[in-house]
Length: 134
Image 1: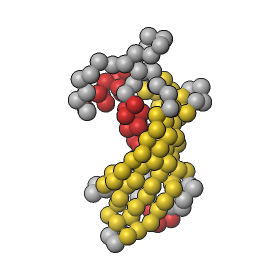
Image 2: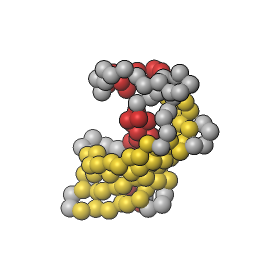
Image 3: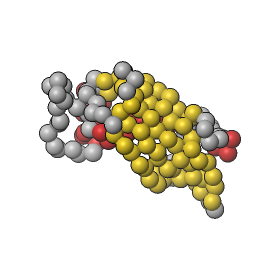
Image 4: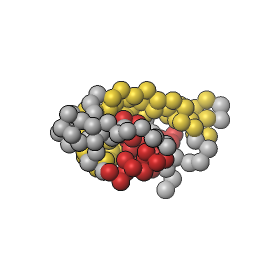
């Protein structure tokens, strides 16, 4: 799939997905980042997903939907986690383009990330900056 990045405009939704953050997904994430810490547990006794697993899941749709090519740099991110996410939670992840510009041989895209749980409560928001070779 090819995306004409020059035609993307600020305010445009670039990704929207619903995922279940199940135990298998959390386990794969924990293994990938070599997290050896004990999992946190919520007030209800359910294990909690690492917050950065939520962030990684929210970016999955962006990377796939925008067909991000090799050579792309994840230049920065600012994330705010608003509520814990128990393992097994359904998450709605939406990404909206905030900025799309070029400078030299690079395209800079900033996307705003918003993640809500199955009850419609925002659990994470933030933005991610990616640099793509032009």
